Length: 299
Length: 166
Image (cartoon, rainbow over all chains, first blue to last red; front, top):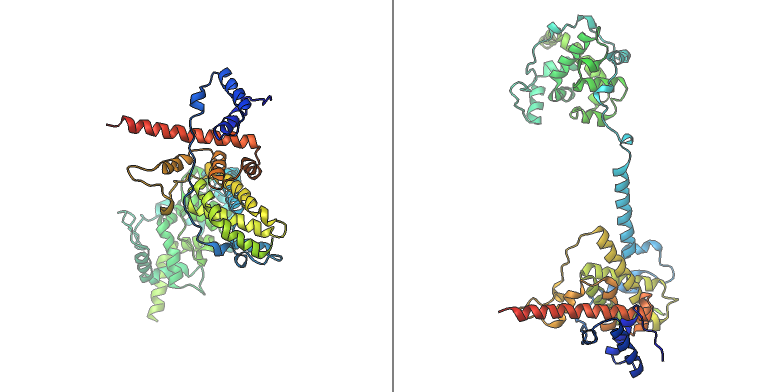
């Protein structure tokens, strides 16, 4: 009997031999094959180990019962959710991983990002969109020389680098009621509150004082400036103005990215540009407004 | 297969299926998933599955689920294998041969692991194992021979280590 022993199956024959399932003829052929291959018969035919099954019980058999699995005929497909098959779990995880990978590998240009300062448009563009918020103070009246030194008018100790907490800052601003309302009054005279004012003025936490100075500077530079980029290559306000002129002030994400994250209230979000203009005006007329407010309080 | 027969399958085979899955995967939660998936699939096809073939069908599903799980882990998850207390291999200074064999078992390729488990735990014939795993009888024998040889060699190397200790 020719058993056709080869390299693919000789181990199967060895197993049969060890289990006593080969007849003498087959055994002889197997020995001949092993010898021909230069293998060690003694080593190959050493006794092999066998596993002994441990006593382990499955404790949750109730979950396998039909009442847990649903009716036999009309078992709804969704009922599988009580017993999620392994392949479904694997598929779900793979799909989620694929989705994340896709998002991660998505071309960068499709993702929102902060425009580089180099893309800033000339400041004229900003000024041209201020039609709904007419500038009350002529640009020409703003002179760099007239810009006061940056002082801590609203509790932000900028020069010393100390930073009060937000609540302290807010309290400080709200205590300065006259000034805040004076500043906000041109903006939303009907709805201004100290809370709104505080929120607007919290912008100073994100460099409102610098904001003010830069607005002044921007306006002062304007007549000769070809682009804001050249004059203020790294300023946040440059970016802010650019966004505002592009009508993107509703894109709070950009503002957040620019560091304007505290300007979160409606009064700022809806009218960032107006706030800038109002603040600008208020800054110019602060003394007058203070005086006016004082008069009103005395009345 | 009737509902009563299905229930009988749960009684007869749930422990065996879990033992098989657990010995192969060594993680209780995964082994339980395999058991549940296997029974759920059988229940779905309860009308068409013959009661006498139910056990083989269960182990066939479990075998493939284990392979999927192992490959998934291999590709996506780095898992520290933690053995549950009831199945933890004895950590005594003198572990018995069966403990060592089960420890070494986890180092075998998943197919070799499953076929040797089906043979030694369940006593399936090589032909039946071939039916379950989709392999030929000869392939099953080759896999089992290689698995046992690996286990034997590991045992011998452990013996040698013990022998050379002072």
